[in-house]
Length: 452
Image (cartoon, rainbow, N blue to C red; front, side, top):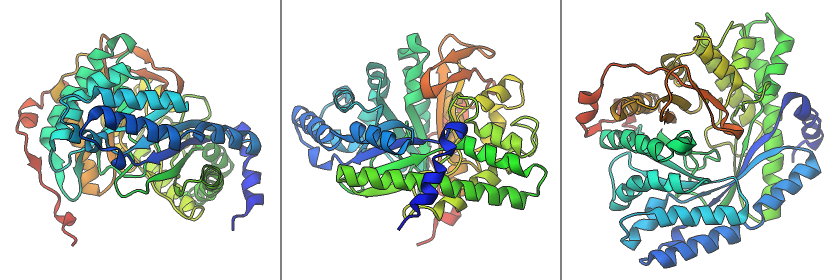
């Protein structure tokens, strides 16, 4: 039984503190859509998605109106498409991306995730075809998102996949160069990807999930920031406790929305992802929370420690507020989507190397990083390898969403629009890692993976 009076009090935080539900994501299994005929498979995929998600947007909008809670995105995630498409014998999977796009348009959702492959230990034929199809698929669609898992703490890092993804990202950037290389903003490379992530661009519906499920992602950096304004100069014990209490209230609201959406759609409730997801709006920034703790600018010495405290306190407060917590859960640090991060990059306080250090303690990794368009594929692969290593060694999810913006150089800015925001072009290390990336093979799993 939930304390609805407490939940409704939380609603007063919405307008002043930009509290919102970032996404309601419906996960849909497509395993029963597999067919040796790609025509039949695509028809089944379209029919299942549009029937299951027919009322998703309307239900989300009704909950918004009734409770006064903004729900920013309504999304769909599906079974990794490499598993569905490979039975067809097709040598290119563009038509599968196009049918996902058509289903997304029909249901009215903002994004659909799952043009994905899991290759942390090796490739199947379908995995290889899907990965090679990514650039054209993301160029030809606007709502389809793609993710590739290249490593895990149990298997190590597939460096052949890491090498290939550097090339795929650069090819995607070139194919969408007329749109500021926006295709790369819909592509994530993971280590330790989770099956119930409601956030794009990395969402896919894992094979251990139910046939259909509702997952909710909450947000609320502004609420945390304002709460911390009342404990200036207090010790970190007080800071942590304040964040925990605020995260509890934020997550309670997410639980309410998840339960309502589940009941009205007749679909099981999966998880609440209690992440702090920023937006480009002033007052909705992770960086400003860290600065409220006492940093002059995010990126200053102490930034990683501040982020570690924030991430841990959010998890501790949120986990008591929901019966099922999952997804990524914690603090996101996407540069282009956070006005404080953008400001820190512009003034020189925040570099790619400092961001990499911060990813050791945040929810995901290097997210929405714009780099010069002439960055080499090997350098991109090296950045992916470094981030995957952090995830594999520390037994956490890490990811890279990097955008080599064709025609742009350090000091330029690029406007993506909406939640994707504005990205300052960041400098990358100019020394080569080509010989390292060219080795290929697999970096073995760490010794602490041997737990069975």
